[in-house]
Length: 119
Image (cartoon, rainbow, N blue to C red):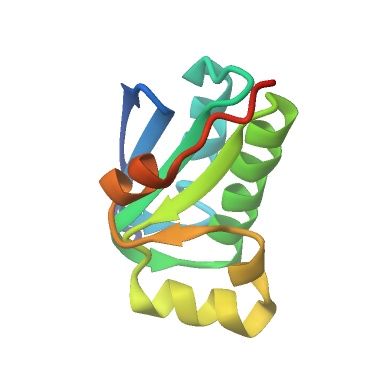
C-alpha cells in the first residue's frame, strides 16, 4: 500500500521550495506535477526540491522531477535538489542524472549558492 505524499511549498528570495515527504511514485507523482504551474517562478529564480522526507522514489517520481526541471527551465529559472536520500542519489548516479540536477545538503545551502540568472 502506498504511503501518502506530503507536499509543502514556500517562497524564498531565491524562488520556490517544494518539500516532499513520503512516497513519490505513480500514485503520487501527479500531486507534484499539478503543483508546478502555481509556483509563480520568474526568470532568474531557482526552484528547490527538498527531498529529505522521501521514503521511496520510483521511475514515475524521477519522471516528475525531470518535469519540474523542464518547468523551471521554461520559466528561465534554475533548479536544485536538496537533502537527496542516499537511495535516490544512488539511482541518479546509475542513470547519470546527478549531472542534470545540482544537489545540496539542505534547501538553505541551495539558496545560499543561488545566483540570479537575469541579465
